[in-house]
Image 1 (cartoon, rainbow, N blue to C red):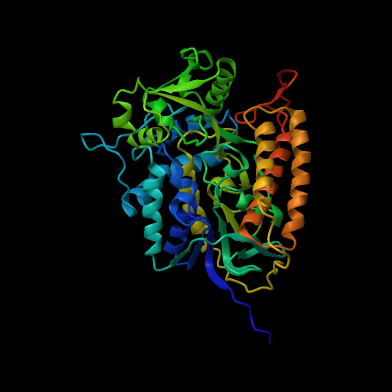
Image 2 (image 1 turned 30 degrees about the horizontal axis):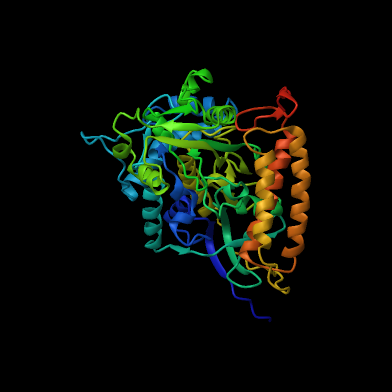
Length: 508
């Protein structure tokens, strides 16, 4: 009998180390599954969760009120049943994992009660936070907790390259631990690979947000949905090194002013600075184009900028901003769509689950409500972990595809130049406002780019190349979805270069 090549096995394999992946690993381990978590991140800062500023929304005992806000922010496009799952399980999940298990030190008032914050499109204060660096204070304790768990192995600096599939079922992944792919076989595979920020020149995501899970799942035949809904955060630093200026600043009273010093948001929406993100982002961009600049004026913060948001104030000082007026511009922030999943994170492929930003649960619809991304990752991560552990499928050792790595290394700057071309195309044609003709032209450019990259992936295996391939696949899927949706809703806003906003078509 031929010797079995080197491989690993796990009851549940989790790909990704943000809050969604950690929650899935935790719950699967609680169900007595042997869990392997692989992540290409080398430290927490490489995961999108670590970059989350504002906080995590709770229902604060009133799930119906949170549901109304989620649906309103989505422009009525969120799936009500999925929102019910989110709001009904929000408080229990936060209490169980973040407060009791991890003991996250959320900010408190002087009387010892939680200092709940309010952000855009929320009707009340319900957001738990730690300064404006909540993701960091959640993710690092979470990873430390899993490192010490007897049923969980965390393997960092390990990228998933391909899904291992057989007859419509996913059996694990090939990682980059070997030059031609290292098989990891699992009874259930959970993708928690994060977002797509690397597809745009300006993003609040880490550089590794290349759409890996979406691309791998789509190439394996899984359904994707709502990929046209790419959310742009309205207030990122406008300089060359963008960073997020949390929505909590506006929740505490900061206002937006144009280059003439005028506060303009009341002219765009009755909720002014606390309007839904897509509305504020387009207003900021319009004022930048018309007056030359938009600043976030933090002089109106009741407790003082330095005292209330010391982390953000330090980031400003690092970039030479010492005053109270911070130049801002919209910046790619979050993908509302992704791999289509049900209420337990199950995809359309047997054995494959997806959670977090790479998944489309239906909660966000066309526009995400502030501070619901960590909550969605937590709730669906717990659900997917429990369901994956209970699938009762054992790891099956198959003949995994062997990736070819026979040709010389990539030409110098090959990936960087292709990424630059991809980012310029996405920025020009699939940004805040989109012209249908430009979307079609972008699709053609992206198809050619993907073809050029595919020619190299046939005979070379490297993380850099596969990230580029995944970015090309995901970008093309976004362009295709945008081209097929003729209705302006939320993040997908159609205009024509030679005329007014495109007339919406009847909903499909």
